[in-house]
Image 1 (cartoon, rainbow, N blue to C red):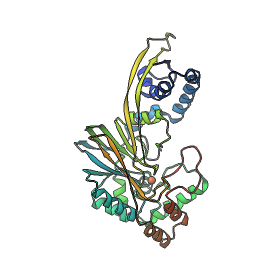
Image 2 (cartoon, rainbow, N blue to C red):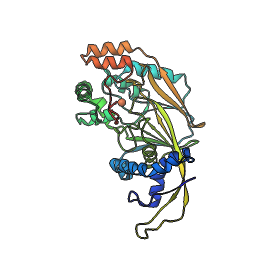
Image 3 (cartoon, rainbow, N blue to C red):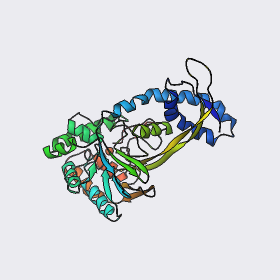
Image 4 (cartoon, rainbow, N blue to C red):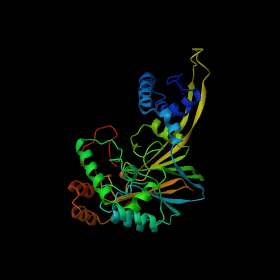
Amino acid sequence: MQSICIYNLFGHTEEEMGFYVAYPLIHHIVKRRNNLRALNQLHGRLNLLKSLLLSTRFYLAKEILKCKYFASMGKKDLERIAVISCVHGNIAALEAVLSDIKQQKVDRIVCLGDLVGYGPYPNEVIKLIEKENIQTVMGCWDEGIAKDTGDCGCHFASEEDEKWGEIAFSWTRRKINKSSIGFLKELPFGLRIEDTASGNLLFVHGSPRSTSEYLMESTHDLVLLERAASGKCDILICGHTHIPYVREVGGMLAVRTRSQAEKKLGEKRSIKLSPKLIINAGSVGEPRHGRPHSTYVVFDSHSKSVFFREVPYEVSATVSALKKFGLPSVFSERLAKGSELIAKSKEIACAC
Ligand SMILES: [Fe+2]
């Protein structure tokens, strides 16, 4: 294994650097350890990482977490957990997914929020979630509607996207009843299940930092590792992107550190980085993976396996309701295609 000098690169302690900085470099180094270009490129990559870390202000994550409300499900010996996300007022899709889940012999269902927004039946969705007693965390739309913030708190890719978001927000706010508002207000930011056979699980809508932060399939390993570490979990289960995926991050890295005072390289040492699994549950009511079918996942904590489920539902029923309520036709077109209609920038953009 190559050794790397990362002395005080970001003004953090050695331990912090081992925890937060070392991980993503391992892939780069191990995969290319016989390739001299890797060493030539290392300096540039460190600078890139520095900008990334500073721009995301990752070092504040632990402090921010102290302010969040995480509900605990305690230590459970659960094996199969169905995870659904982003229902978005689409009752036909929710009913189809719940029916499919019944065939999967799961021990529990967890919902990652975004019960409302865009879809025509926000109250009906909340009522069914309540009736089925599904443990749910707060999504960005749930938070925005419950607190009447004026939007879902997401970054929109274009002015047009933003306009549709505003229309959906004001329509949902007018439509939603007091009982539903009360339900949304009580949702926790996250849920924990500890000491499963796969380790500690954390369920959030966006990330352990925020309901509106995107953890995309393309998000840098470093960011994923930091979010999982700051959420104090082995398995981080999120939604918000509307596209399901699973990624594993972890490895070993040899590092040398140098203190600011001594300006001298220390001994080389290896840091073991605990592997983290990042699972995205996709979307029940606003799928964006390229097909109109609802998506969700089943996580087997005993075997640490993830099963992706894709469920067809009666899209035409939801489309008819959207038209009946006078909602923009773009919402219907998006549902029918199962993808974004507006090209996004390469940066993380709104999909919520
Ligand atoms: Fe969503």
